[in-house]
Amino acid sequence: MDPIIGIDLGTTNSAAAHLGPDGPEIIPNALGGRLTPSVVGVDDAGTVLVGAAAKELQVLRPDRCAALFKRHMGTDRRYELGKKTFTPEELSGLVLRSLKDDAEAFFKRPVTRAVITCPAYFNDRQRKATLAAGRIAGLTVERILNEPTAAAIAYGFHETRTDRTFLVFDLGGGTFDVSVVQVFDGTLEVRASAGETSLGGEDFTRTMAARVLEGLGQSFERAEAVTPLLVSRLVQQCELAKRRLSKDDAAAVRVPDAAGEYGAKAAEVTITRQQLEGWVNPTLARCELPIRRALADTRLARDQIDEVILVGGATRMPVVVRLVADLFGKPPQGRLNPDEVVALGAAVQAGLVGRAGAVDDLVVTDVSPFTLGVEVSKRFGGDFQDGYFDPVIDRNTTIPTSRVKRYSTLHPNQTIISLKVYQGESRRVGENLLLGEFDVKGIPPGPVGQGVDVRFTYDLNGVLEVEATVVATKQKVTHVITKHAQGLNEQQVRAAVRAMETLKSHPREDAENRFLLARAERVFKELPADLRRLLSELLDGFEAALESQEPAAIEANREGLRQFLSRHDPDHEAEGDAEDAE
Ligand code: AMP
Image 1 (tube, rainbow, N blue to C red):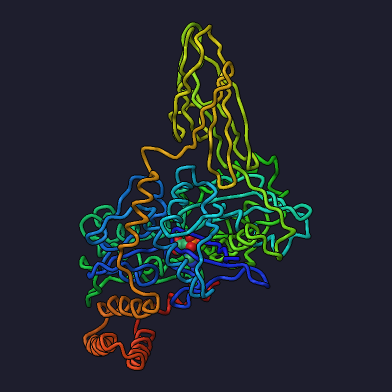
Image 2: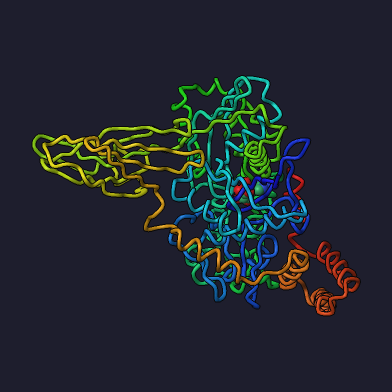
């Protein structure tokens, strides 16, 4: 049978994994790395770069690169890279395609099926956008799996025998999710999920950059508008310093000039861990509400949580570990690599979908993290007031689920009911998310109170179908909530699939060369004149070798360039530190 892979489509990094005979394993990318940065760029020749090479290009050419697009999945946001325009779904599709290519190189056969994860707190529109991204990449998405559920599965896979309750604390680059999970008799049951879709490590990095600029008398917003190169380099510096501060008490941040270069007079600011913690604490405090909500929904007290599991790169910060320890009165667990655990869990789920022997006895259930319902009018005295939200499926109901509720006409001889479907937790629909609307026609004329049964069916991917039946005639109207003002419709997805085929991209074998070239361009700008000359010669030699297409010459020149960069890249050591921290 064709392999099914598990994919963690992350805000900052993505990863693919498969279920091997000894359990889930990460599939290496073309550079041999385990994580692929979720960054897409278009170079001067109009060729698309994905991953580490795009991340390098982003430092020098932020106008040609896009990152953090996961935050805008399912919206009308568009990205202009060079002469091309992309939707967030297309950019995610490019990342997915790159992971698909890695899996195909790994298995040496086509890979067309995947389980893809998304934040538990992704709404219906964002989930559909994730499905669309999969299709754009040429993947059949077998299941959309919640990230904390995936993490719980990765932990549960090896440890199903002990019954216990754990809480998954997932703080990634852009989102925060919390799930309460019970392992009972070999069944892994998600009891509740809650979260925030705009809270993560990237906010900490940007806060740090803003404070550094403020210290120098500049505003971040203004700098972003006027000197984008300065900001993109500074953010990169802050990212490195932030990682360093997870291990050290202080780290230096070099501040580039307006052109994004480090001249002789470049300022250097030292940031202490204490300072950083003071800056991020107000944002971090927002984690408490979703935790409280998830616990309240399961009616569990904090001390009934046996274990807290940390997931997501931002949980490497000591301040996060301390927060969790304080909240739960015990140190959290991080036995599995927090950057990889979601992909590993997705691979186990892929094994469950493909009925791989190793996972035969594992049962996983998940919940719908949001309340789903319709708009209703309420009668106060003689007046009707519309705009009220009436829940059909309560949040944290185990899925798949199907619930039916009866609604009735408000006026004599009313033959149509307009159904507006919402998702959210507010009493008023105005503060909830409109998922779709449709008319139920053909109600026989008659007195007030003609009934319409509305059935909501929420599937394992967290995608909703609504069916309305006119009670008197048994006539049914079914509506899969797909069309909406925002996000891609079916036609747009098809167009995106076609557009994908015409995009120029480098062959996979060329990935390391492209990455080295992009990295060398960035490092070049930072070097003193004598080293620049040396690097320039190495680059000339490498480019000539690439032109000649002579494998031996390419390899020899590549090795020279690689060694030079590992000695002279000022940011190299810090990257290594981050890896060590795993
Ligand atoms: P993820 O979405 O799980 O890949 O998490 C990525 C986020 O984790 C980014 O915002 C990174 O800056 C952050 N991160 C990764 N490693 C560290 C570290 N050692 N210290 C602090 N933050 C980190």
